[in-house]
Image (cartoon, rainbow, N blue to C red):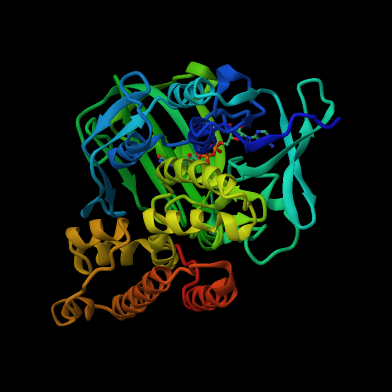
Length: 481
Ligand SMILES: Cc1cc2nc3c(=O)[nH]c(=O)nc-3n(C[C@H](O)[C@H](O)[C@H](O)COP(=O)(O)OP(=O)(O)OC[C@H]3O[C@@H](n4cnc5c(N)ncnc54)[C@H](O)[C@@H]3O)c2cc1C
């Protein structure tokens, strides 16, 4: 069945990016349809496993929303304030501040607030709708098809479709062949992740394992090969604890150690090995205590738009390649997608050309640093624990490491640092690889500062991005143990 009511904008997916895109567009007076497979009271639930996430977000990203939309956040959706996020070396001897002040969210409540705002702003919400793919006419996306709550086939049509379906998107992956938005993500660029929410008794104080005022990230290639573990405090004696692994790194690590560990066994081991967490009990509010899901850790898709189509959040692989923080870019892109879709409709041009301004705005606001961060992530995955310990102690200052998380390349003072690196051939090689990685990061930062101002220059620019990233992937291979 085709719905006769045509919309200006369809937003597929009412997670964070989708609800914000719908709010922005509806507030411009456009006719907006917001579709999700969830019932309204389960806004933003990612899968049957729940709202699987570490739920940490920097305050700056909440401020970004507030600069566009009059909304305030407080407890309970902001479950716990944290002063910062610290990354710890495998031997726990080095500790770098990664991001400043932020919050660990009560995710179901935060999502509910955003969806309520979209509906209040005028978006029409259709729940329990399974989006199966885009409707394509004349090489343009003109709507979506899928199954409604009664499992009946239905099509909806609009001038612009915004894909906010998350990493498993059925829209991006079913676009027509095109050189703008890639349909597939390399499996090496995906982290398999799992997390628990526990209440627990504090066995004793040890801020290397649990800090009620800071979010902790544990780098450890044996425990979380190609990824990391995290312990994020929640309100009361509760914690969001989990790990992410790269499948290839896990396979290599298992082979070298003669083990058969899986994400699940490693997660359980990680919780068990935490000396502060005693008698953990699953906190299953909203049936959200335990879950598994995936997160992409590459640069966002080179173009976020195609004819009649835009993507926001995880559907475009937006999470930060080092930290996997995807809430910030989902919030930023949701706002900018809704805004730019409305502007294109006003100008009556929803082709790639007409939607291009979104690429430019997102790149300026957030996206220009992610290719550089992807380089650093690939470099990190090539280091074993001994080298990470050594490197965190000797290669980078805390300030340089903090700058890295914001996409700033460290200005290593070579003479001063090389003398440390000279201790051990493996460290020398890691240091010269770090120099290579930093050089590449600078190249990518420069390349993204020249993001094509129109689709005409896109092909040549994208070819350059691909070629340079291939160089990086050829030089650095996962080597967790
Ligand atoms: C284990 C884990 C830990 C993480 N930790 C953090 C963290 O601490 N901080 C951080 O910033 N980021 C973190 N992230 C990333 C963050 O969770 C995501 O970047 C964020 O959820 C992206 O939001 P989104 O709106 O783009 O997509 P999603 O949150 O995935 O929302 C997609 C929406 O679309 C709906 N949907 C999907 N498919 C269909 C379909 N076919 N039909 C209809 N509806 C559909 C879903 O039900 C959902 O409502 C983590 C991710 C994982 C997996």
